[in-house]
Length: 244
Image 1 (cartoon, one colour):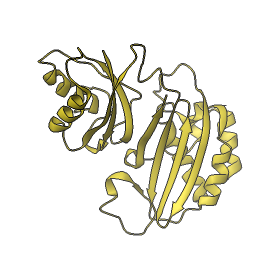
Image 2: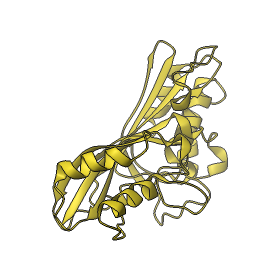
Image 3: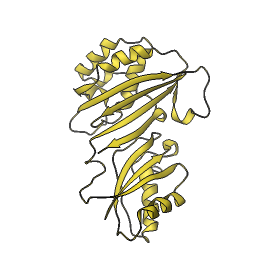
Image 4: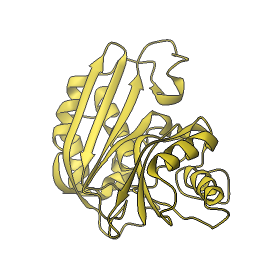
């Protein structure tokens, strides 16, 4: 039987979602717990996306195969009893055999958080990019408007991105401020490696006055990563939701 898990995690202490040899990953931690629940039978989970080291999630989705002898509440309670406090299973469902956490997804929502106060906020520090400078949110939103729609986002991907196609549809890109907290929410059908973090870095450069909103449109059209902005650090980014 196929099961779908919705997972929340603090990515600070992990090398990312995907199992790797250079440190603990979220995927490996959950797989090890499931393998133990299944009496030592190796269990593989497949996630909706590979969040980078230090990136968080409120609604990551994964699927796995089980024998059907453990009830849904047993998976949720059992996993939460043994997983570290930085990972929680917030939902468990039975799904159709053809459900795939990655390939069945129709879109995702990411949120990036920026703290703009002159002093750091210890209670937020693991989840924000702390920028000790003023930032113009209206200019950022003006630039963001040029990025909404179906475009080739080649200029906004990591140099080692392995995706064969770079055209994506961004349905919403919203910049908002609440006191000292600035958030950037991006919804799209799919994302390239580091795409959100490069978008954020580029928008921030607009907010600082380093580049104009019209310049962002030219960067998008040019497709040259070297002309886009910096890659924002990982800790401000969270995968909020996966849509099916």
